[in-house]
Length: 170
Image (cartoon, rainbow, N blue to C red; front, side, top):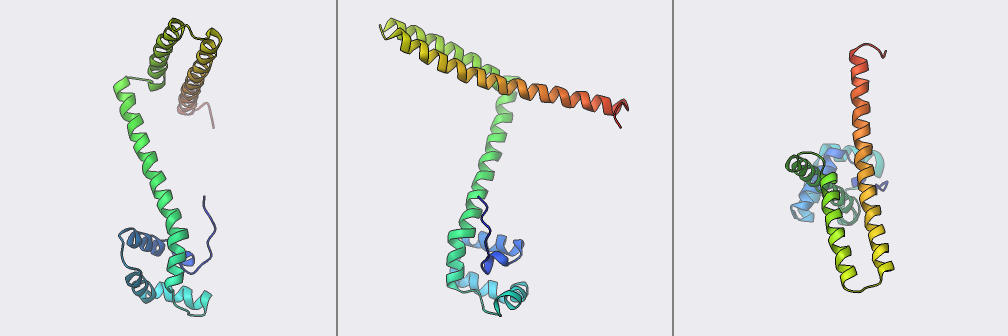
């Protein structure tokens, strides 16, 4: 969630806010950050223009820590997670020699078959077992639909690229 912030620190240039966030992440003391920050000419320009020249104080930094800096940390963590997922996905696709989704669907289908056989062998409720199987099938179908959509988009992109190369599209 990107909240619109309007405090002293929020109004500073992005490069300075980034440096503040890095310093806070490195556990630099608030006193040190404030001393550095209030000495910057770019900061003085903003403070003079928008805040009557009043320096950034401990309360401002406290508010930033719990607002802007916390949001920055969450955004950075999310970015790292996405990078890791992308790298893992690329690695899995290479190992799987193709679609991880199709391989996962095959694996799940085999596991479901084993589970269904176990449920039947345990003398459980056949209706409950059937409902579980239907839920599992729904999940597999959803995965495969997503994979098919991705393949369809890739093919469509290749068609457009071919048309553009052939001069069929202006």
